Each structure stands twice: as C-alpha cells, then as structure tokens.
Image (cartoon, rainbow, N blue to C red; front, side, top):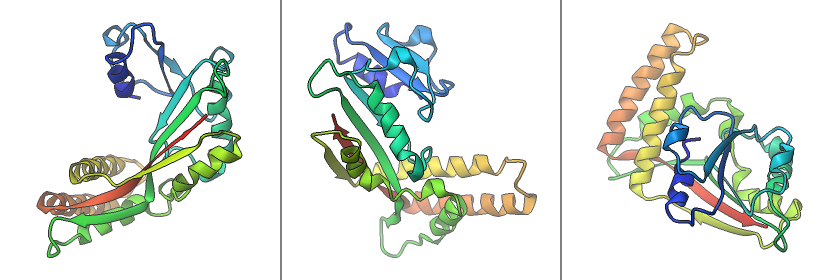
Length: 221
C-alpha cells in the first residue's frame, strides 16, 4: 500500500478517528515518522486468517484494486475475512466498501477515428496472455457475492473514467510490462519483442490512443 487513501482521510477527519492500513508490504508507503499520528500500518495477507486483535475492529473497511491479486475462486474466503474485520457494535454492523477495475472490460479509446490502436492491442496480448488474474469478469458480480455473504444494504456504482485516467492507467501498464522483461525466465528474443511493442504503444498513447477499463464500487454492511 502507498497509504494515499489513509493520509487523505487523516486530513479530513477528527484526529480521534483511528485509521489502519493492512497489506503484505509497505515498501511504497511513507516512513512511519511521516504518517499522521492516527495512522497505523499492519502486515496482513487478505487470504489468511484475520489476526484476533483485528476481529470486529472497524466501522469501515475499504478495499481497492485487488482484481489482479484475487482469483474468482477465492472471493468467498476473502469476503469472509473482510467481514470478520467489521464491527458489530453498530447495527446492523460496519460497512465494507470495495472499489476495483474490471480488466475483462478492456478496450481502447482514441482521440480521433484515424488513429491506430494496433500497438495497444498487441501489448494487451502480451500482458494478458493466459494469466487468469486479468480475467476479472467476477468484479461486476461482487454485489451478488456481498449478498450471498449476508451483507445488507448492498449498493453498486459503475464508472467510466475520464481520458486523463485512461492515459495514466495505460502508462502504468507500460511500466508493468517493461519490468516483466527483466524476468530471468523470459528469453532475450521475447524480451526484445515486448520492448519493441512497448515503444510502439507509447507512441500510440502520446498520439491519443489509450486503454480504458470499467471501474466498480460496491458497499454493503
């Protein structure tokens, strides 16, 4: 986690509000000394049992952008863990908010019809391949999973991002794919092919062609 959501909230809420970040790594987070006094970070793998001191600890649990971390077969157990974090001191209980991107909705958007998106299509083939993490058609169905987990007052919100978000997300994908070319398991020929595709895709992006994904937000309690 980068702690961005928590640090933003810390500036808007009373200092008496407890704000905790839970993740397997905090390498991207600020130093503890730079965080607001009411922000605390805890190591926890969402796929593992909830530590006893965190059971029922929160009025609100916010989870975001886990689509490439969780498989569809793991949703039930992950939701069970998240619900264990929620407080039952308020009726009918704490709130769970989940925001994610549906990578199965991937498409390209162009500034003008005459622009080519072929390099982006090529890049997506490299990135997605047979990796089931990018087959996230379960994301739009999270509301149903919430209901099956006995959450109530379930609400869903579907959003199409503005162009500047599309461009930022596309650039992140360039970085992710470039990093993958440094993997020792990829042969030199394949790595060179991927890098060439990235160069072509970067050019296409600067001209006005980018990826777009549908984003979803679900709330239940």
